Image 1: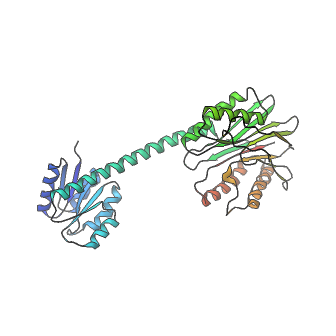
Image 2: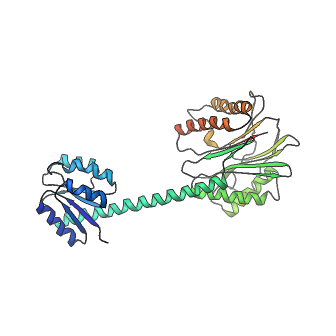
Image 3: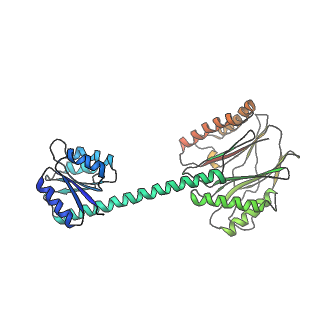
Length: 368
């Protein structure tokens, strides 16, 4: 099917000449001698290229140009005039005209203008279709991440979620009950996007195999390190592994380059960072070792795991961050569920994203 070029010019002589040139160049062509007649047709056809006269009775081309671009942003408009007026050239380009043709014109100048217009139209459409397809795929992958890699949780004892900058992120978490103990692995794959999210999915698969053999946090991270290094060797990982033992009322933990988890006790004035002397990034070198540390837990404590997006910035001091964390405990104590905590978390996240919209934010809250 031939590409149809639209011509709008009050001069019949110009219109017919352009029709002949377009047909010789292999294009279909439709000619109108006024904007009033042309616009209903254009709104239906959305022609890829329009040759538009600047000076016409009733409505000139410069006034019509913004309307055309609003109806069809991809349409390329070649402005035509018989006057050598630089102001018209500037005004045309300012309103997103793709080219400017000075009458009388040669067949070669028309050929260059129309071929350039068609080529750019196709480029814009292809890019739009690609972006549309990519966005659709990203939304689909995002739904997978929400369901499998980092599913949202909201119960009386657990609240977890993530906010991706561009649909998906490298954030993930995995929990499992093993012999009356709870193991939590929370982390971030290097980079963002589709690759990182699927490596997160692969990491969860690796963890399931590892936890069949080992539950000591330092050993879990060491084994994950070697798996990541030898099986992928293109992405690194930061993660923290925690083993919660309710019988001994202890948390055993090891850190692999992740932000330090925070434990808030029932005494809301007390906040404890789960620091680790060894906090190597996972997947950089084979044989990397980690250290397991232990800390007692009391009833009604809250464990807060978070990625670097939550860390204090120029507009958010450490004191403000800690006040926010302590406030989560206070709110939970009043309601005994995470529904009201969610409102406070959403407020903090919204403020964070307002200061930096390109952040990825992920978190995991566990009540004891």
